[in-house]
Image 1: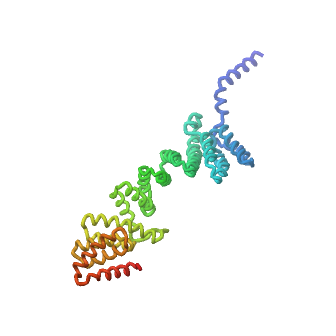
Image 2: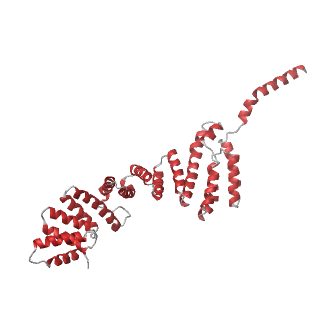
Image 3: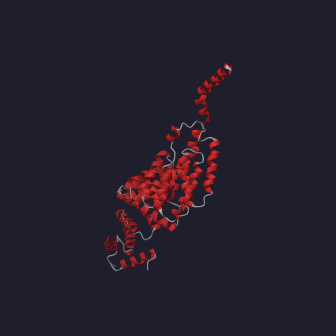
Length: 356
């Protein structure tokens, strides 16, 4: 009997000493395959709920019960299905409230660390489940704020996402948001990133928009720099999917800027070359004919100047009066015996321009 008691006492001592280790071994990792099977079974039961709002509430309850779970992506996807009707109804306040409530329950890297989730499961969960799920939810929330026209909040979320993962797709999104906000400094910042991330064949639209912003800021040199990049690629051809008439207007604008710069440098041959391109893309650009007339006059070619001034005059736009004055001066100097002949020169100009 004494031996039995001693043996029993020894067993008790061993059990007491080993109790902490037994408890540790009994604790199931929240990212183990075993726990995932249990969590996924619970998720499948949630999906059986036909009431959309009740299913969303069950998803929230799951998150509170299992703050770390490999079934997180499934729960998040189903929860967003419950948000979708509010998005379709454009009830942005409700959609945003639901999305923010769910995001508030999302675990973080600190949550996983504090829970002492063992490796390699912790790393796999962070990269394979948490990171993509968080990104998807944040993107949905940013889109909801964007659609609700709360652009500052959309930009705030986008900036946060970009800081965490500087992906080039986000530069496009943020550039668009800041352009709509008319925050041109931030737009140009992300526009520069777009031009770095994408070849000009893909980013020429951004380059042209940035050029317009620089013109508004009266930074002509930066605008010309961007127009030059685009015209080096698409000056002699039309970008895929763009209407030629629309692109001709863009080319006329670009080459008109280049021509104005050449004229300011008194490079008359280059000015005429560039303004000839402008007139080819847009024959109603009176500035092209006016400055070509000025170049020919400065180059001692009065007859050619007369032809260009006549075209600028008959277009009856911004440069019409100045062109008419120079046309009259040159015509009288060249044809003093036939002052009425200037009207014939203008009639010829109308014919060449296709004017009635």
